[in-house]
Length: 94
Image 1 (spheres, rainbow, N blue to C red):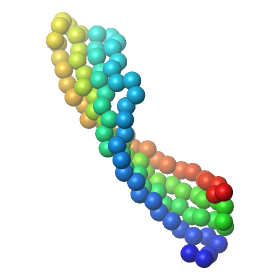
Image 2 (image 1 turned 180 degrees about the vertical axis):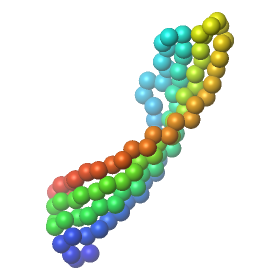
Image 3 (image 1 turned 135 degrees about the horizontal axis):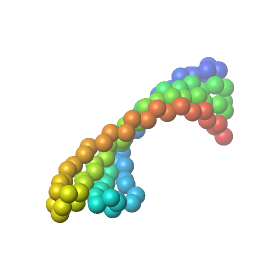
Image 4 (image 1 turned 45 degrees about the vertical axis):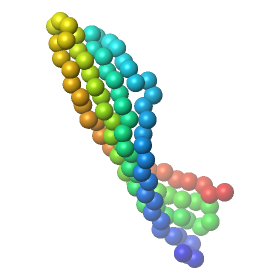
C-alpha cells in the first residue's frame, strides 16, 4: 500500500533435515529423522526501510530409539516430536 505503515503476512512450508542422526549414550541409541516445517508471520513495514514482525514456526521430526537398559533388546520405540517456536523480529530493507 502507498502508506507510511503497511501490514504484510507471509506463509512458508518445506522439509526440515536433521544433522547428526545417530546418538549413542547410556545404553540407548537414538536415530533422528526430519519432517515437515511450516511458518507464518505477520508484520508491518514502517517507512521504506524498516519491518517489525512476529509469527509461529512448527517443525515435526521423528526419533527412533533402542534401549539396552536391563539387557539386550530391552525396548524400542518411536517418538513424534513437534517443535513450536515463536518468532519475533525487526528487519532492515536495503
